[in-house]
Structures are given as C-alpha cells and as structure tokens.
Image 1 (tube, one colour):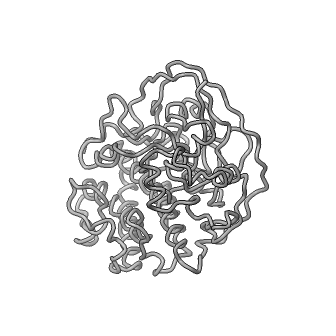
Image 2 (cartoon, rainbow, N blue to C red; image 1 turned 60 degrees about the vertical axis):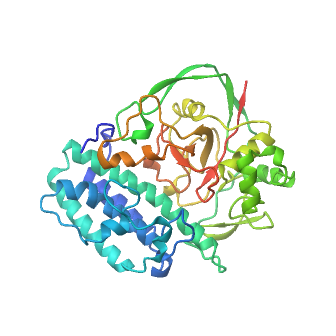
Image 3 (spheres, rainbow, N blue to C red; image 1 turned 180 degrees about the vertical axis):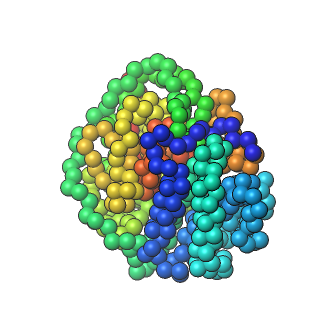
Amino acid sequence: MNIRALQTAVPSAGPPLPERYGAVRTLTLDLCRTLTPEDMALQSIPDASPAKWHLAHTSWFFEQFVLGPHAEGYKPFHPDYAYLFNSYYQSVGEMHPRPARGLLSRPSVADVRAYREHVDGHMQALLAARASEPTLVNLVTLGLNHEQQHQELLLMDIKHLFSLNPLKPAWRELPPLPASHAPAVKYLPRPAGQVNIGHGTTGFAFDNETPRHGTLLTAHAIASRPVNYGEYRDFIRDGGYRRPELWLSDGWVACQRENWQRPLYWDEDMATEFTLGGMQTIVDTSPVCHLSWYEADAYARWAGARLPTEAEWESLAAAEAITGNFLESGLFRPTAGEGLRLFGDVWEWTSSPYTPYPGFKPLGGSLGEYNGKFMANQFVLRGGACVTPASHIRASYRNFFYPQQRWQFGGLRLARDN
C-alpha cells in the first residue's frame, strides 16, 4: 500500500503508540457510557449514523487497513462485517446504504463491543511486536485520527437524535459554563502579500492538507472573536430569515424549503436551545453554533462583512497556540473566551470551496478515497469545536461540509477587505 502522502505521525514528545491507541479507543467507548442499546441503534437523518455503527466502523478500519495486510494469519471477525461497516471505500467492496444504517438491528450492541475487543486484542499484539515500523506507525496513526473524527461525529449524531425526542433527553449532565462577557469585536489588520499554507512540518496530517504552497492575499482584516448568540439574534430580529437580498439563491431556496427561522436546536423563544445536556438557557456571549454555510454567509452580508478565506484564516492561526474549548474541557458546548481564540468552541465556516491544493495527490490505494473524492460542492471549516479532541487539530486542518448542513458544530468569524 502506498502511503506516500501520509506524514510521519508520532510526535517526539508524545505517548508510545500502543498507549495512544488504547486511549483513543477507550475514549470512544466512554462517550457511549450513558447511552442505552436503544439509543445506539437509531439514525435520525441520512447524514448521521447510529452510535453502534460508529463503534463498528472504526474497528473495521483497523481490521481492513492494518490487521488484514500486516498481521500474519489474521482472519476477519465476521465475514459480513466488511459489507455492513464499510463507509464509502468503493475499491474495497460493496457496502450497506448509508441512509439505511439505522435499520441494522443486528448485530447487537453487545456483538459490536465483542468485535471491538477482538480487533483491539489483535492490534495491541501487533503493536507490541512492531510499533516502531514506519509504515505501521503511519497507518495506525491515520486510523486513530479517523477514530477521533468519529468521536466528534458520534456526538453530533447523538445530539441530533436526542433533539427529535419529545422528552429532550440529556446525553450527559453538563457542568455550568464559566462566567463570561462579550469583549468588543476588533478587526485585526492583515497585509497583502504571499503566504504559505498547508502542512509543512513533521507530525501527522491528512493528505488534503498538502502540499504546502504559496498563495496571494489581498489586504484584509479578521474579527478577533466569532459571532456570538446575542449578535446572531439581532440578525434574526432584523428579519434576516425573511430578506432574500441577504441570501445566495441556493441558500434562499434551502431556507424556504426547510422553513429555517433560526439556528438548529434553538427554541422558538430564542432564549433556550437543545444541547448534549438537554435544554439549556442560551448564553448570549457564547459563539453561535449549528449554522449552515448559507446562514453564515447571509449573516456576514447583513453585518457588512464577509467570511474569511481559508488562507486568510490559516495565515493568522499559524502563529497562535492551539488552546481553546475542546472535547477534553467537558463542556461540550461553546463558551466565550478571552483574547484571540481561533481554536475550539465552533468550527468556523470560510468562503473557500473544498478543492485540492495545487499539486495535491491523494494517498495511494484504497486510502486515496479518504478525502480526495469529496473535493466538490462543499466548503471548508477551520479551527475545531467543543466536541473535537484537542490533539486532533492543527492550523492546517481542513474540515468540510455541504453548505446546507447544520448538525455539525459550525459557527463563523467575520472578515473585511481593507
């Protein structure tokens, strides 16, 4: 298997690979500890997946791409799991349709847990013997970053599922948000010129972050913080969802078709919202969340601004420490912070379409399907969110979603031309 574009993964100061493997896999299970088997079997929308499917698919990934090719004599746990738990790797084989994952009452949650234990046992044996082999290190680290993506997806999917339940159940009791205020927005001037973006250091990166390359920026300014709930409520009260002149044509069609009147999960009173901790009072100073790209773009136009490009965002973020409100904080919802915080809380929509960088080449073999084939009709988000593992984020990280999607933890930061 050619993994040429996958960067060497383990930081020199990081934990040993077997230890990191165990920690990531354990965290995924911990995110499910308050879920019942019934919770874990349901699928609320075609974009989402049942929690037990996430548990199984991430195990299939290690079985398919690590154990099968590299563990001598390894036999798959079950002959049908490759069909049931393949996501979109067409070159590997056929797969169960994504919108119908919620129809898989079998295998049971107990069966899926047994599958994970089987894969973990073989993976730990393999790592105990060969954890220093570069090819294996790269593949396992890719698998762990893949699982971290699914940890976030699992929380997104459970939140959407529970929001549709009339009981409005909580996934977990959440701590109160820390006291905060809304510092005045400052626009940070940024000069015109050429900057380099993309992954260019040692350590792991997905292939879509490469190659590092130069790009020209015009003079611009970027807001010092994301747009918050209170500011977005002003947009709604000013008729933001009723003014077609603020919306792109496709966005206005989506707004009317879906009857959008406010962000996903907001109650009609615009004072409460559904969270992973059930219904909570909206904190006006917190970054607004669960916006589609169309909503973010319309708000920016209403505010007399625009969304930053991903190059503008990365050129500012590259010099900043990766600190913020991530999954490890235990808040599981965005909160206001002091100073310039580009990471954590909410993924920030950019105006950049998700397209390949100049000279991009996907990974060889089946892993080339991981990112490259989705480079059309989507937009890039940057920075990570309150449900993103902190070790998963870099300044060069490119997340991507379709412009109409809202169930991800997406917000926005404004930019202006100078």
